Length: 114
Image (cartoon, rainbow, N blue to C red; front, side):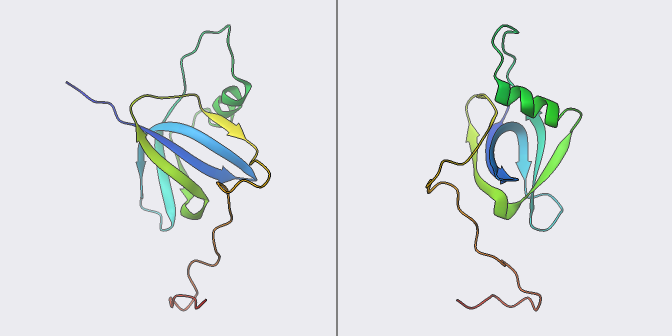
């Protein structure tokens, strides 16, 4: 029995929260980036269109792989089935979206003291 893996990745980009599905998510070869490959979109009836998912289909048309800065990733889950991809604005006062402490790495390579 073959098991196709499905990952849900939630990340922040340009002030919006992206929730997308892909067949592969890895550390990749770029330091500090998460590599997302095999973007999955729902095959819904043409009668019911989700404007948010349509926006993502247009934005990622022709993209085979993309990289997200690790500090922008909120969550990555391996899920049993694919859901609907969407882009939303963060909810005001939401504890789910917060700026990551910056800088993560200092030029000298020494951890920054709090």
